[in-house]
Image 1 (cartoon, rainbow, N blue to C red):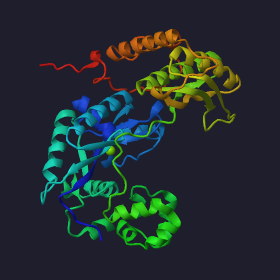
Image 2: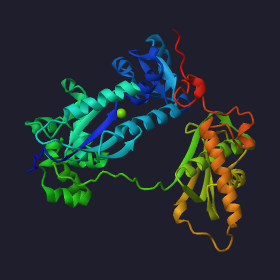
Image 3: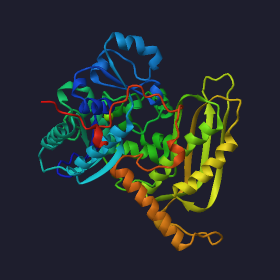
Image 4: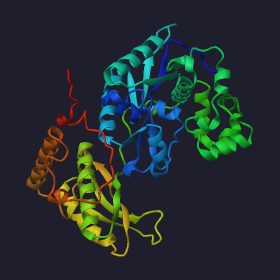
Length: 430
Ligand SMILES: [Mg+2]
């Protein structure tokens, strides 16, 4: 049986509700209490909905062109996705949450696991209410907080908090008496770490919910799912197996890719698009103190094309780098290898692979950069990054990115960068 200790460390999963829609409503008060949907890149399909839009039964994932007329008729506000806004709001959210926890693992753009010491015989509800209030006051975002002995149970508690109206956004799985009734409400496919295949296997064994999985024969789980399954069951029973990961494993690769607003057929357009993505990817690497020694570029036609095509090309570098100029030279050369004039290309991207932390990097003895060149290159990139950070992302860039572009993503209903661009700060008219 799990130990019902109440004076030890608990784990909470803190999750922002309807994050993208809430960010939009936060910077534009006119959108509050209105149905709002957010579209994916290139205004493709619905990827987020405010509660009001959910209530109108607007489906997730529905293509915009199919839903447009109905959305219009229902008076739904439709917005293009504004990732710089969501990224910035996420940073603000996580910075605030850090102050209210002992350890924190950022799990996704709008979710974090935190560990929190449970006061002896006292409820964590006051803490959770305080965190919810503070975030609502500071960012206008509503949170759901699920508390458990470990990560798996915190995830379950979060689901319960969302689905039980009387929970008011907070559910503590450690302090309830009739936990079996609650665990029965969570079907196996909704348990964190259970994929489609495992869920099908469990269902075929008659295991339908979290309570039944917790009580299932351990040997049978180990035989089928190995140590991962064993850990999951132990967590369901209340043991702590999965630690809070404060230092996330370093990234294996960085990708920047986009769909084009309209198909392209010219080499210069493909090269320009790849160059712009390479400029972004290089800056991303520098912000994480990484260098890449393999660069890949790729392109493809639309999935619906009658004349389909896809191609990639890569180059291994002798010296790992995060210098935009060096990377651009490689990317421009590679773009010629993947281009073919007879196809209408709808997407392209760059991948920075074989990433190494700059601290541990070894110089090649065949083609080493001179110390002086390396210092110059680092200080030039640092200057560009800090100017772009201070003014805006495009204050300093390479000439290729400044030429006119008629292939960029459709973002016809983009909200302003109110939290990231000084010129876009909302006006208050008294
Ligand atoms: Mg969320």
